[in-house]
Image 1 (spheres, helix red, strand yellow):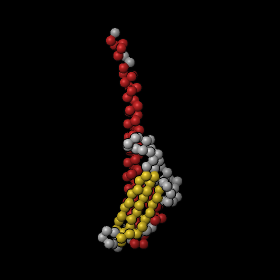
Image 2 (cartoon, rainbow, N blue to C red):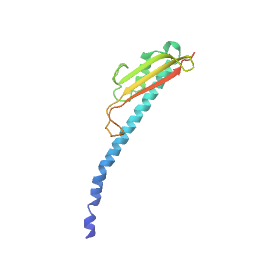
Image 3 (tube, rainbow, N blue to C red):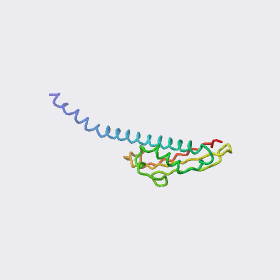
Image 4 (spheres, one colour):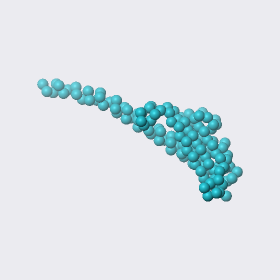
Length: 140
């Protein structure tokens, strides 16, 4: 008689815990995508800054810096169809500046606005935007 009462308890427990597992899975996927986008944006800024630090003539070459950034971010959504780097999805600026050691330097700023994520209150609030700045000394 006792076995009959406990027979459906496993199904009820699974029904109660399944939404939490789904929530954790979606959160892990969103955090992975968020982290990948953040790292890719940082790497793209470094690659563009490395190019613009080659000499003083290319220290403010925004066009080629844009091309380098788009190639680095090609795997991210919204980037494949872009032809320039001055819109709400991707903004790249390269400027010639004076470094902290008073020598010529280049500063590259990359801003990437991603897609909407599944909002998780207090953790992921929806759409995100990253801005990464890299400054390198221009090689003499």
